[in-house]
Length: 277
Image 1: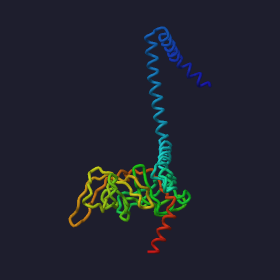
Image 2: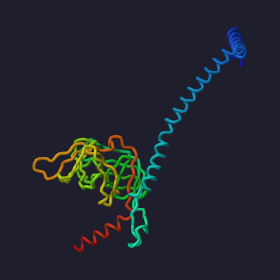
Image 3: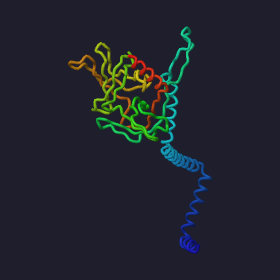
Image 4: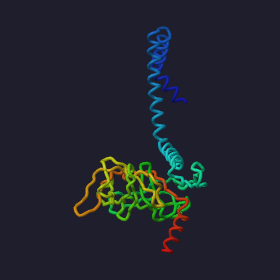
């Protein structure tokens, strides 16, 4: 306290000058319309910039929360699209008498490890057996097909990326429903190859490629990419089509694991038919 009093005493003239300046400025602002307007506008400008900076900082640190909310919303909306439901006819004589049963369920997950530069690429997600994930479930992102679950622990899962030499996916051309197979030849993480489309099929650059729905892993209509180039190579009977992927595998953060609710029933029926043959 004594040191504070001594400090004020030594700098008495400075504090008196500052006080008089504040009083003078206050009197000028209060009694002069131009100066009062200038002061108010300046104050608003400074305060506005401070609030804008504060809002930007708050939004930046809230991005994670916003992203998680968006992922949850995307999952909810994806669960409501027609491709996630199995349509069964209750009365074969009445077209309108149908029952829509949900066929696919989606589980949010975050990619915590990923590779794109190997011949056989994998990723790890932060959901596992405790969250309902099992091997051979499909994995998709906001821009399309990502891979298939391979191994599962309690809290984590290993996923075979679409960028893997063993990965083959049933797909079709959206505009004409012609079926083919998607695989990765190991050259570019933004491109895959589509095979088994016959030469009589009319193709155009930019045609969209989607999942066929013929496997029990992915619903029909999940996007994969667009046709970039195509040709019939010498000695081949089908097109070799370069497909530009919608998903950028080098920027993956959030994905959804696809659970086919009827898969066990379908696999059991197909196994029974196979045994009979």
